[in-house]
Image (tube, rainbow, N blue to C red; front, top):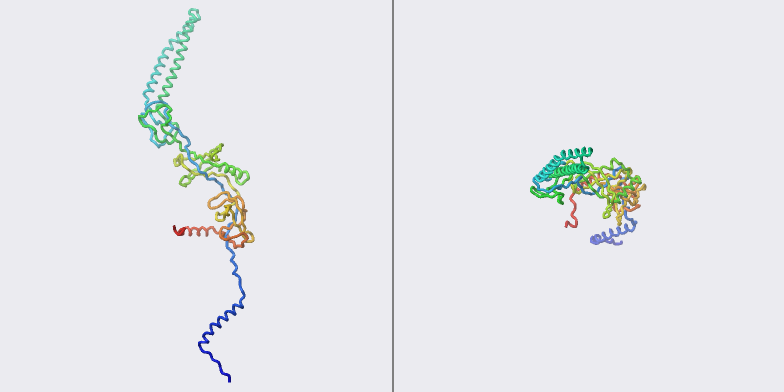
Length: 407
């Protein structure tokens, strides 16, 4: 009888792990190698380009200037007796601003009036003598020389009376000039003289300055290049000029506040500034409350015309290459990505006005642009601006992470 082999429990425990490893190796040899899992199809959101009617305008910076300016100067020499206005107040035309001492001018007028009266008192007798001598000359009772002397005396007296009348009028005008009046209505500035100051006629230094503020001018420069571009757009039919609307202009004040009243475009200068290559546009705005002051920096929004077929694209859908040229990625009919080079006209709000590169009906990718390449197949869904605005509001409410480790 063959003897039965027995194994110790320790040997059985050592053999079990080895058998398990052998089974794993055999299973691995039977398994076929597998490649990496397929990449998921990228998901993107797109905007469909559609033409729309928009009013195009240009925003230009400029400065304000008074509608009319009058520098007040005396017309006669004298002493300022009284200043009759409050500095910084509104004055009316013909309002008396300064009173110059009228005493010497009143005396000059009285003197001229007396001299005129003296000369006029001699006129009847001189005229009668000349007429009498004329009748005697007709009867040959008087020589021609005597009549000529009488007639010459009459003419000389008449000329003297005319000169004295002019002197009286001059004295009266000079007396009136002692009251320095406002030539225009407006707001008057500070006075350069006080009571008791001596002034001279037509002196270089103005006594005060009056500025008419209602209406008020706004002068803005516009480059000739922009003028030529606008003319070309009108010529090509890209803009529909509406004359009744193009003359209307809006204003933005220094603090960014829109001015409540509209102005008008008065004229465009015909001379180009050689240093800046621009022309001056003069605008007129009503200013009944005096809110706009001369010398303020403002921005004028000038209407150019209406683009009937404007193509607008969200700014987030426009990218730029290494050279700074704008482009957009679109989804074609096969759901593949295509690259389109763009020509941008200007920014309107948070959108770009596209001059060329897109056509109505193009689906432009605005979300999911990361790692996209032309030819990539994507899963495209329409862009939801409401959801995007909520996401932006949520992210804006969260505090931004500090840059550079908070340094």
